[in-house]
Every structure is written in C-alpha cells, then in structure tokens.
Length: 88
Image (cartoon, rainbow, N blue to C red; front, side, top):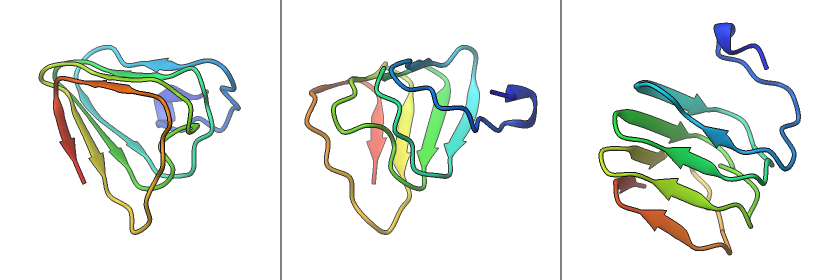
C-alpha cells in the first residue's frame, strides 16, 4: 500500500485495518479484506462501495464514525461492536 498517496491497491486478504491518529479515510472501491476494521475516536471512515468481506469483524469505538455513502446496500454476517456513530 502507498498510504502517502492515500491509495492501496494491494490485496490485504486476511489482514485487517486498524487506523491510528485522526482524520477521514474514504474507501472508494469495493474491498474484500477479511481481517476486520477498527475505527478509533476521532476518525471518520466513508464507504462508497462494499466496505469489506461479509464475514469481517468491525469495531467502531466511541468517538469514531462510519458512514455508508453508496446507492446499494451491504449485507454482513459477523456481529459488529458499535460504540461510535454509524450513518447510512
């Protein structure tokens, strides 16, 4: 991944993403990583396509935000831990 240009075209596969710091991350294409996603306080994640593999875990910590900004819908089968803001 080339995070300096905010682009990751690598296949993360079973690896997950844990975001450090604050700011906004926009996931603009379909994602199939299955290792899960952790969104901490002070971070906003905007998903404009498929967020992640349907069986991936999600942890949305207090003060974090996850926004679904797509015309379709996503179906996820793993439970999510949501203590932050979930928008759709």
